[in-house]
Amino acid sequence: MKTAPNKRIFLIVTLLVVGGALAALVLSSFTGALVYFHTPTEAVAKGHELDRKKIRIGGMVQAGSLVRESGSLKIRFLVTDGKEQIPVRYEGMVPDLFREGQGVVVEGTWNSGQEFQADTILAKHSEDYVPVEMSEQGIAKSKESLMKSLK
Amino acid sequence: MKILKKIQPYLGWATLLSLAVGAWFVYSAPADFQQGGAVRILYIHVPSAKLALLSYLFLTIASILYLWKRSETADILAEAAASVGAAFTVITLASGSIWGKPMWGTWWAWDARLTSMLVLLILFKGLMVLRHSLDDPIKGARATAILALIGAVDLPIIHYSVVWWRTLHQPPSLAAGSNAAVHISGPLLPPLLILSGAFILLGLYMVTVKARQIEAHRRLDALESARMHHDE
Image (cartoon, rainbow over the protein chains, first blue to last red):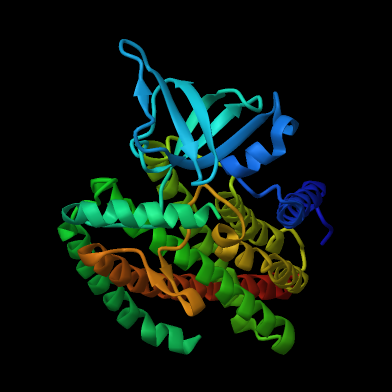
């Protein structure tokens, strides 16, 4: 039996894809590329280094900071990690879990000291699952878990 | 392999029963305070993810046994676990995506947890393809077992991804060990525990059925090539 040529190509492609995926994952594990977002404190510390780059900042939507412009889908709010806060501007639909006092990841561009221009808003869910009858406890718990995860 | 034939019906009934009990608990579980009814996706997603990782662990152990003892049974079990693991990895990714769209606001995010889980699917599929890419089945089995061992590096990465790196995916809700914690309150928890058990039974049942099928297939192939040899 001799190896059919297309079988050999299959073999090579398989090894390349699997090996490549594994190598990419292991390498990015060490370079920090797997960190999905900056915290506001990190972003402020980096300052102008992040200017004009597409970045993600994650934190909590500061309670009481959310302003909706009437007659449009424009919103403004503050993202905070308890130490620093960054003002964010966004226009469009927001996910179900987006609300004040809850986790959020904003994607867009930011020039140090200015408003963050978000083109995508992702809600960050905490690891807490609480029956609807225990909402009060749930809100407190999920806040605590979120702040812990930002450290 | 004989023991598999014996336990198959028992496993099948135990799986069916535990899935039915789990389904009833899911049906009667309350809504989550934020997610509402969508929290029920958790009951498919988490048990599938656990089972996908356990399948790879099982596959790794079977591969070591195969390379070490040259046991064909171990090789058959590894091949069966690859298909079952791939199926549940797909269910994990799909159910997560369906949950992610309304909750996070996106179907997919290239964060550490999702990416490493996608690599697991590529691994399972790669193992399935590699086995049949070599003409000599023994060589195919050995190459597959070696790749499986290399790929095992993905298991700790998946498991700890949400702890080691900041991810969009939430950290574990059920943590064991030094910082043990349960983040699932009241009646939302039992369905998850029951279904996690039920899915493990389901996985064992599927591996059993698949392994017996693979063994039968190999025997048929051997008979056929013996007959062709005889005819010549």
